[in-house]
Image 1: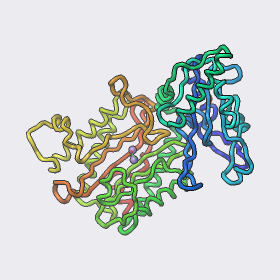
Image 2: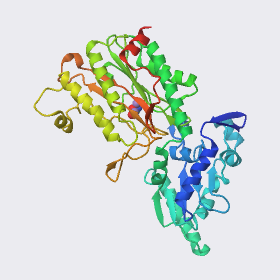
Image 3: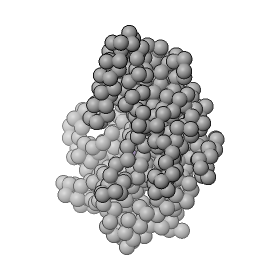
Image 4: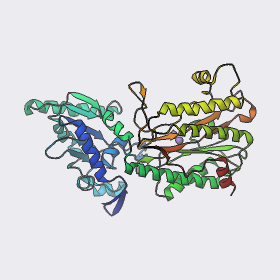
Length: 452
Ligand code: GLY
Ligand code: MN
Ligand code: MN
């Protein structure tokens, strides 16, 4: 861990600048001396008038540079004699800094972020095209942001006109930078693993705090706010996504974010919330009885989802895939739904019923997703039509659920119940580590904490 002075403030980062430099060196080898990588930082987004949404750096840019400011552009130019890593960023500006906060400036970008060269943003249009000269292949994200695509084309046009007199080539091949970056982002380094472990522990502790607070009559918003406060108090003020606090049948809306209803005695409340720590996400769901006791039907469904999660967890090891993990969960859920009479008995085999997706009305999402700098992290699930085998260092969620709509044609006692149990998992050499282990999830544990 290093501390970076920035004006009078200290910025503490777990991912060291050495690690960022190693990432760039590895990429430079892969790109080769005929290529160049160009990556944009995120921009501030207006919410209204002159008020912005909270700024979040672009994940690829953050992974490569660690540089936290908007509007910057980074280039990686392998083998360049004057330095491989060039950054354009906002210059120091006492007037703007007085209003909007501190900036590193070009000097800070060199000193703290190891840029070989740093230029102010207003030199972008004149200097950047020149940096593309002599390179045949341009690695750049495209097809995501129209305005950025246009800028890239403009820089290429300008480089081309310079190339005619300079007698040097310009990139003729465009390669989506995600092809290069995302497979690397998918395998987490030990420092990243540690950060994700910490993020998950903070969120797990915040879920525990909510278990101590939940009670009938409370507004969903109270729990959402308490979650943010509990994370902030532990040093993680950002959330990885808008929290979902869904009482009763609201839990059957998968991405419910209204979070403004009162919790009712006898209902469950589904809480899907996770902090972000230095850019890395956690993503945990717990489902709690509002009054501290699961009713028998709630408990039947809860134990079923928990059993499905346990089955999926047995597949969280190298060599297994996202698909085998999902199948394990679906098998337990389908069997259980038949046993409870929620799915009617019929003559087809379990395998046939799974193939026909009989479970889909009650379980309509996949059992997890990659987790990292993005909550739904980058990286393929399939490659060349084959499911990608898990490897040590991959991180994912395992989150089976059941959602019985209020008007479902099933026994009334099950209607309006939504349950999800979600944990964050790191694939290790011999299995997995549950990063969110500290969030209680058995019926006995949950009932004890709420009732205490
Ligand atoms: N919180 C979003 C998800 O569980 O995927
Ligand atoms: Mn998730
Ligand atoms: Mn979630």
